[in-house]
Length: 241
Ligand SMILES: [Zn+2]
Ligand SMILES: [Zn+2]
Image: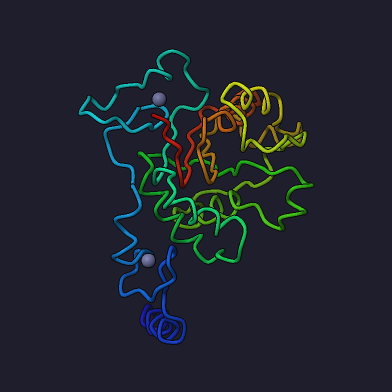
């Protein structure tokens, strides 16, 4: 009986109308952004680097790699993101991270699944927070996204396969080199969990791709523990000129 949920949804929409995730105005569509905010967000589309997903400004074949990936190939097989991290898209992510806009998770997860290439049945794993930071924040936004993606696609969700074994200083003001140092050996897969990921494809989920250092360190730990290959997806992506 599909009629009941759709009537129920219409009823809920009347009571609590869907709002724009950026400016909170009441929405007519279901895409999450109002018509004024939509053009402010730079959604990423092809062409982009086949590995790290960095957008190219010119037309090039789909298998092309950016300079950075061809010089030093990352541990993940692919990384994809929904939009470029700009002053305009930043507040979508900050709201999601620090306040009560947890209800945006299903919408963001749907956007993230659209950014992915064909992937068959991966295990969805969030980039973990150290327990002390999780305690301060009460929830891990990457885990919320990974959980929603798993729900949308019917994939398995494993929030505790990957552990952050030491608390790393915030990456905010670090250079690329410092970020790599900062997350080196920060992640591991507990011995008891290794069996679960033998030969498996992994979808690693985070909110922002900044330099890729965190995703790379996580991928390295997952591959070392026996995963077959790692793909990553984030909501925002920093693109430096
Ligand atoms: Zn809006
Ligand atoms: Zn690249």
